[in-house]
Each structure stands twice: as C-alpha cells, then as structure tokens.
Image (cartoon, rainbow, N blue to C red; front, side, top):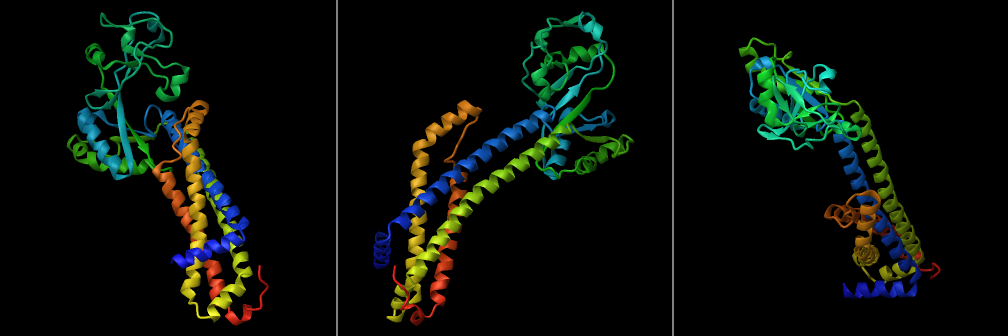
Length: 379
C-alpha cells in the first residue's frame, strides 16, 4: 500500500497543476454544497413558520365535534389526537368559542353580539397570549353586572391577524363569568397540522368518526354528522407549494454544483489515464496485477476528494462565525453550516463522485490490451 501511495505522489509531482486544480474545484464545490444545504434548511424553516401563521393560530385543519356528544374537552382532545396520529397529522391545541354575548359597556356595546374565544395548548393548559393588548382600544367588557377588564382581553393588531385571525380573546380565568351570564353550548375546535400536501380532510374526518361512533350511537347521533373537518386557510396551500418549489430549486443547485465537480473530476481522470496508458500497459506487461493498478487509481481520486473536502471544512470552520453573524443580522435566522446533517449529506455526495471518477477510468484501463498502448506517446 505504501508503494502505491508513493507512486501516486510521484505522478502528482510530475504534473502538479492537475491535482491542485481538482483539489481547489472539490473544495469550492463542497463549500457551495454545504452553504446551499443550510440555506435550504433556513428557508424551509421560515416557510414552515409562515404556514403556521397562515393557518389560523396553529393548524392547517380544524376539527369540530357536535356538542351533543356530551364529551369533556379532555375526552375530545384525546379522541382527536388519536385520530390525527392515525392519519399522520399532529394535534396542536384547541379553541373554545363561548356563547354569544353583548357588552353592557361602551365601545363594545355598539358592536353587538360577540363570541369570545379561549385558546388552550392542552386541556387545563391555556395558551399564553398578550392579554391587555386590544389594538389601542382602552375599554372593558361588562356582562351581567360584572366587569372583565382589558387586562383579560386580547384583540390582535393588523400584523397579528394572520396568526390569530380577527377574533376577540378572553383569559381563561373569566370563562365561568361568561358561562354564568349566558346560555348556549361552548363550541370547541381542535387544530391539527398536516405534514403533507396530500393530506385529505376526509381522511381525518373518517378517523375521528370511527373513534366517536360509540358515543354518537349512545346519544342517537349520526357519526358522520357529528364530526366536521375544514381547512382553516386556503392560503396555506400556496405557502406549501412555494415551500416545496423552493426546496426543489435549492436541491437542484446544490446537487448540480456537486455533479459538475464530479464531471470535471471524471474528465480530468479520463484524460490522465489516457495519457498514462503506456505506463499502465507496461506495468501490466511486466506482471503487475490489475488490482494494484486499480488501487493506484482509487488512491489518487480518493486523495484528491479527501484533501479538497478537508480544505473546505477548514474554510467553513474559519468562516462559520462570520456566516452565522451575517445570517443573523441580514435575515434574522440561525445558520448552522457545520450541522451533522449537512456534513453527512456532503460526505455521501463526495463519496458518489469519487466512486464515479475512479471507476470509469479504471474500467477503461483494465479493458485495454497492454501491448496496444506500449507505443502511446508519453506525457
């Protein structure tokens, strides 16, 4: 093995420009691949957050159950959670819409009947909301002689309505005040997040119906009519489509760069092996086995790729602080170019091009008759 390495080094010293160029090319391709991979991740995370914002608080779908089922919030949440997991979606909290009320205090007195909404991360765990923010309106809600201060209300501003919609939210502590002063059922809706554009709301509905069927039959209700599933925002479809499209573009760019580097490496190796055909033919004619020649070619390609990848890694380590600082200041995102996932994917890509660049020239050398190339011009 050591003699093969010495031979490869000797050949590289005779023609240093070619291996040096290939090392630089591999290093540049590796750096670009890693940076584009991380840029793809950052963009994907940003678009995922946009999807959540466009889906009305948390979910891409809202599941509502008939109040006639007589189930508690905990029981409903458990049933919806089980059904969601069965079809590959995730439940993320729920809302409660209180019975319609009318404030006895201005200015809400003039807006007529309103449905106050409560948000829950889970049964018994209310969602933290910026209560006291009512979009600049200094008021209080009065009902049944009781006062609900603005510190217990939240009305989203224009910039917040993509996330919270145009609703008036109530602190959980005042839930019983509303229930004592009003009549009518509480309407609950459970947010679920789809992990695929192919998710069909009918699949979610059927999964929930199967689980509420025993309760529906007990209460004399039709299970199909007791479950409603609706997409909470059609705009989320556009965001998902944009997310998928951008991910494809980034993948084309990063793998395209690596492919071009692989083609260049392969082309250089084919030219080099053709120029050295006389050498390999002479070696085989003198009794050198094919495996030893293959080993020499493989060591050369692996060495070039390894050195190029090492140079790229050193450059990324030295520049990682600047990359992270730039990403944070310019785009308010956290860049992680040296994340394990990035490096693992890069290693796989480099291994593929190394195999291709070493395999094809090797096949060409082994298929030639040694006597046919002994008179080939030397480099």
